Image (cartoon, rainbow, N blue to C red; front, side, top):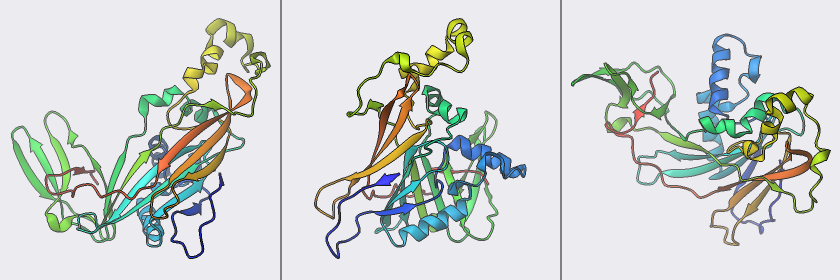
Length: 319
């Protein structure tokens, strides 16, 4: 992406820090599942396994700790994954304390100028709306915490101490799991086991595509013909569906070839949070000679932490 911002006065406090990463920190959940499966099968070269930092939770946690040890607000510019999007990560150290440290990271991805593929073009469309990215809530400990597994069978329940390996421990907060006969979840044993840090991830919604102001509308007849020719156009009408504007207005990613432009909006008060904006430019399928822009807008305030986990609080994922 191309970033632009006004020059700050000499010795002014840093409002936001830009970090350029060759690939993404946060990726689609479905991509994580596919890459995890490939990794378990030893197919590390399939689907670019390991590109996203969040596939290795401990390394990702160390990266976040390193970034936020120096800065409160970070914007990461990334690419090389064949689609563009924006995601926001709020991070807290010692979230259960009276004075937690709050941080925010926004990832802006623009990719690529060329080399879009059919998978990215599919998630660009309304089909991805069937499984939108849900907010994620993660907690972590530097040292193994005291965790218990709570099993509920009919009207009875029992607690089982969980063996936790040495080193940093990272868990995702999830609903209880199980079936009609047995339900279970993990929980912390007592208040002394509250996490050392916590972060939440949320994907930004893609703004409606808008024609560029400096472009004049072009004749629809100039559109590139469908590669399947008359068979697709006349017999099944798939070309019409694919080129339909409503169908192409997905809610999360730009899966067509794109170019990103990043800008910042805010007041002159350096203590006030800014808003970071990413505009992704791409050729529209219903008129491939016309360029459109989709906007992502993410605010950069430092949010207060969520309530402590607590013994009866949210549930943690199983090992």
